[in-house]
Length: 407
Length: 175
Image 1 (cartoon, rainbow over the protein chains, first blue to last red):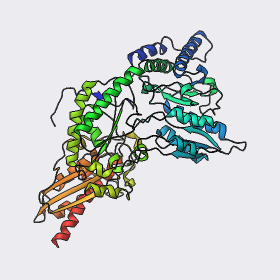
Image 2 (cartoon, rainbow over the protein chains, first blue to last red; image 1 turned 120 degrees about the horizontal axis):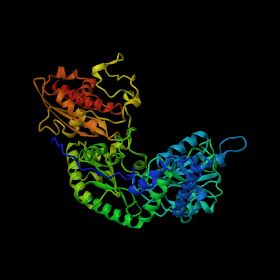
Image 3 (cartoon, each protein chain N blue to C red; image 1 turned 90 degrees about the vertical axis):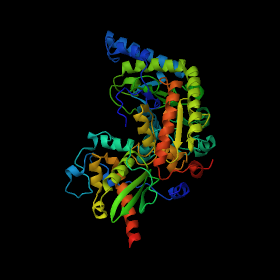
Image 4 (cartoon, chains in turn green, red; image 1 turned 135 degrees about the vertical axis):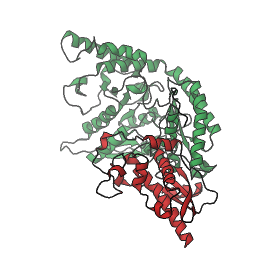
């Protein structure tokens, strides 16, 4: 190893994990730590000013989502929003007079763990859960959803865009099926801001989760949109904040930051989407041209513009991740070794990818921090790393991809 | 193993991690062997006191610059261990002259820990007689690398399994 003491250039390609807080958002947040601090529940001047700022932020968010301000609940993030949506709806509608749990929930097999594990928890509590399969591109089939609906189905939750492979679901269509039957529909839209339209009216959804740190806002703050008239069993019990639906003193600075970040994401959506899609397409095309036995996963068109999810046959994801890391390139991998479960992610398994191939996964998610220069930097480095690891692999042979998977 | 075989094989395999190592401590096991036996890593250390995955300098060094990587032109014996479902396959090849391991090479499909442990193993066995090399344990490899994260402990076991398979093949051949 050349002992290179000079600073390695860092290239951040993990925007689906988290994003840096934009300067404008930080500027908007700072006054609410001090001097404009205050508890919105307090009746004095300082408290009421804080309340005003809170409600202004709520209105800004409501404008982007095309809903009423009263339909927005601020939470601590995507995970809490998802928990509140699933548990809140099922417990509000699914408990009968004897407090026994009855009702049916439908989710897809590729949901984020915040949904998946909450559904498993609810299943243990006595609710019935259907895990809808997806096709090899990660799409939910609307016909299969229609078939899975039962008389006692209380809620359907299907994510807007997948965090791993980037596939975007036909939410409008799926939600319409549920609405026609009078069944509530929730979508985990955490990956959507800045990339996909967020109007809840257009989407036909009854509940929708967002998390600020995915769109250049701060960590630790999120949103749950709940359509007027939808009952929700409060999970956080206490001081009665957020119209008694989520107690806890509001994270005022975070909420202000979120509202500004969401506005910005929506403002720059069309332009940034085009830029990122071009960047991503160039990256994928170059990688596929230079590195044989590589698969580009997820739906080729219906996908997040920032997401390039690749599988390299014959090598293991954690090795790719760490070797790229040594070159200053930050990515993520859903391989077994990069997680603690020793099995590839549930998403890749649901897509039906051969497990050997799934072990060699690498997710590049581009964002504001990336430009074409980065692509030129990454591709040769990645090409060499894959070649080195394949030379070391006892299972790799040219043409391996075709033997593993028939397309 | 050819890729075709791998593809067919994985359908019938399940990933079974050696759970007994999970929850151990990510430090040099040999330095402080618990009373429970050489292959048991102490559970006394708090699982949450260390990050989930953190490699020692030595592991990183062996991962970035593996020793003895490749294949021998005429191996006396070779062995393979692991399972593509778990994402680890190790291959160890030996050149043995007069019961001494004169050369060893490895190939590994797997994570950083898997690569580092096979690399470390080949360093440890080279130049040793078979009797000496046989005595090398799981703990010796972990100790040589300055420790492994608990979740990765099974990797070093696999490196050793591949080596023992090669030895068994050699013994069968020389009988």
